[in-house]
Amino acid sequence: MCTVISRNFRFSLLSDAGRWRAREHLLSVGYTEKQLQPIVWPEDAVSAHREHMYAPWEFTTKADILRGKRERMEHNLWWKREYGVTHIQPLYVWVFWCPGFFGFAYRGWWLYLFGRGISSNKYQEGDIFSQLMELFPLIEPTLYGPPDIKEWKAEFVKRYQRGYWCGKPQGKAPIWAEVKGTSIEKILGRAEWPKGNPAPA
Image (cartoon, rainbow, N blue to C red):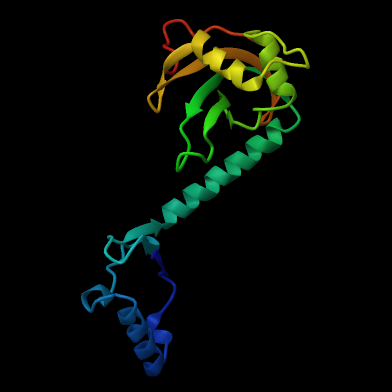
């Protein structure tokens, strides 16, 4: 049970009956007399929270709030500046085997595209995925259409294996792409890992 308390709230504003009801409620859900002692607030704290009744109090300060506002403002400015502008930037393709949750949910081969500002698996199907299969022609098309996606991912891991994920081999390869904002518009070609900088394992 997560508990959040604002410093602006004044428990003393309640009537005597209200304070008694609030105290009885807290005791009924498991709080002890010791836990109902007043919180010792740092000088610039504006709220306190804890994940459960036995966890220590964690405080949010005015500086935390101002930092969050600055980060949101910078992100919004970046989005306005970059929206509609196409850049060519390096990404890398990551293919790995997910054992699944409870043995079946999300089980199978997964593909992610990673880069500065990009971390997405929404390109597992569609035009971008078709461009990747053309860029890395690992298996032949089927009699009825494009190559089998599962076979392509398995072959990608064999050819471009780099480290392991969940105890299974994973594949990684760098590429160049046209990126607009956080959206990948077009795959341009293969890239090389930076020299002197090891590729991610």
